Each structure stands twice: as C-alpha cells, then as structure tokens.
Length: 152
Image 1: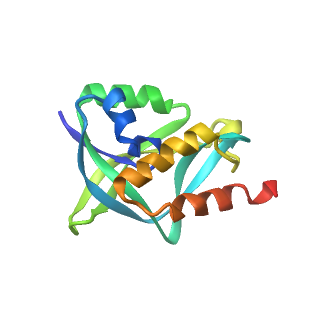
Image 2: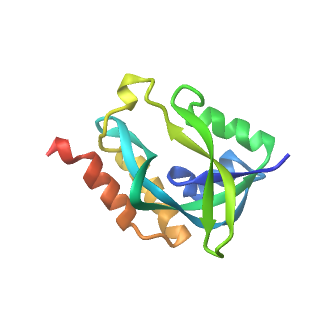
C-alpha cells in the first residue's frame, strides 16, 4: 500500500532518493506551517530535524512511497532509535492539504538532542536537494545560524 512521506532534509536530493527508494515518486512540493528546521547531533555531524515553532515554515517535497521504500527509509533514518514517525498535515503548492508521514528526531539519545553543525558532505547533499526542488537556501542558512549559535 502506498503512502505519502514528507522530506525536508537529505531526502530532498533526487539522486539519493532514487537510489534508496527506487519506486518512490515525487507527489508534490509543499510547506509545513508552524515548524522550523534545526540541525541536531554531535558537533560537525548534526542532522536536520523539525520542531513545532509558531510563525515558521519549512519547505518540503512530498513523496509517494511503497512498503519497501518505507523499510529502506526506516533503516536510513534510524527509526525508531534516532527518528520517530508522525503523520502531519502538509499544504501543497496547489493549495491541497494532505496528511503525510514525517521523521522527527527523537530526544531519547543524548548526543542527538543538542543543536550543532552538520558535516560538509551532509550540508552539500541537503543544499543540492533544495536547489533541485527550487527551494530558498535561506531556510538552511537560518537553521545553521540557530543551530550553531552557541558554538560562536
């Protein structure tokens, strides 16, 4: 059975997703309202997550995935240890609102709860995904600024 999946980080990267989830198809572009992007993890190796935040928004790609794709994503995302899954509403650029599954970083693992900077390779992958989707890189710049504030 197919389901909708929300990508906001490295899974915006089309090449990476075609390798990881060969039957996944882009369903549409959208926006998560009331959330913001953050990098969490160990210094120099943090990953993107989202958290509720009034007045903020996060651009996303919505993918249609099959069961095997979801198994591959679960493995890649470290579900359920590193990320948990939640169904949330997404507003597509067409104005349609759909419910889709998203991975959100858990706070159960101590080295995953701190705001920190990402690796350069991860950041490059995320930025490639943002560019190919036509998203404003300012969202990533803001996430880096917020997440690395205490490092300065």
